[in-house]
Length: 120
Image 1 (cartoon, rainbow, N blue to C red):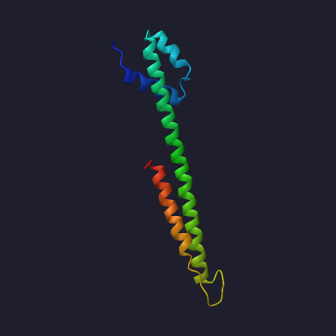
Image 2 (image 1 turned 180 degrees about the vertical axis):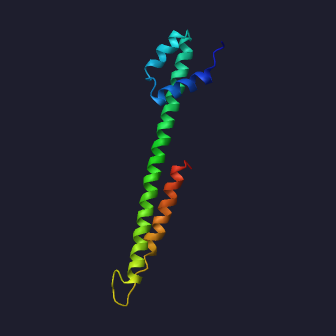
Image 3 (image 1 turned 135 degrees about the vertical axis):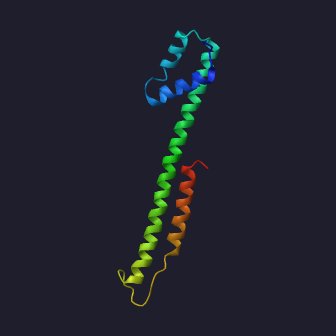
């Protein structure tokens, strides 16, 4: 069977990412497969890059989700204050609060978080 670098990198990335293998075991398995030392260095480096990129993307998605939900919370508070003053839940007499600042800012933050989640 012919050696294929791309398939080897993908295989080891999938094995390490799924938890079936430790990163330190990769070199041993490649040496057992009679792969040249220079090729082993390239494969280890590429798998490490892919693992780091995957971890960074996952972290960005989690941060984006937190930012998005924070923005939704701020918008909800603004809407609650606005609706509560109009319906009399919060009574200011003849005055009403139109909390467009928190609603608008919360929506902007929500869209920024969603954009970060999608990796844009």
